[in-house]
Image (cartoon, rainbow, N blue to C red):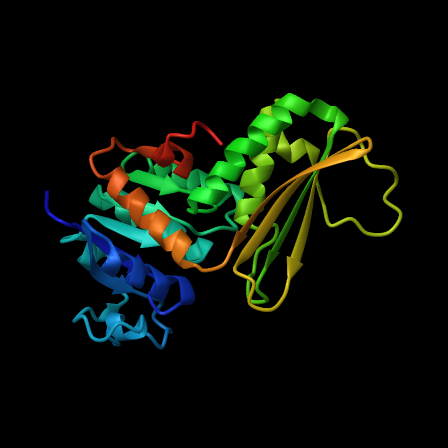
Length: 271
């Protein structure tokens, strides 16, 4: 089988440059194109140079549609407004979308689900193998311990991150809620401040920290009477997300249209 041809969205950003590095190093995949927003300084530049790899002959453009005509998939870790547009473009072309963007609204999620009826969409709040294993463990522990243990999810990211809680924290929250058989939206508690009163049994709490250059730290705390269990993952380099995204793209080749998760890719079940 020929190498899978991947387009990188947001090629000028930190994650975009890391994706170019990961695809270039991967077996079975090649960088087939690079795109960014019209106002980006990356437009017109060589994608390989942007990624610190030297020239690769791929010029960053703004035209996703034209690039998809000769590519297999788009890998998108950008912003919700752009990702929703990209999802529709990929759906029209019947190609593959690997989507690592976070911070979607309910309306955004609906549009992506509609696009997945016509395209293969692998969407995850985090493409790290370790984080997805953490989500599977969180679901299992939540189901085993029950509501006698309070659940708190703590995450920290760099000071440029624009959404909170992180997509990964929400993924872990959904895993905990699924383990308990409850609706996360109804049991989620965020941003406590002032006299909040005693904690309600069964709530799932979130705390978001921002500072420095932290790539991503996540902890799920199960706090019981006189004991505490903590499950933690610390990301040290964005390359782990990029490698996971490439793995997801290769897995998606040949799949039927639908909305998939990294748990599907890794065979971990629904987390």
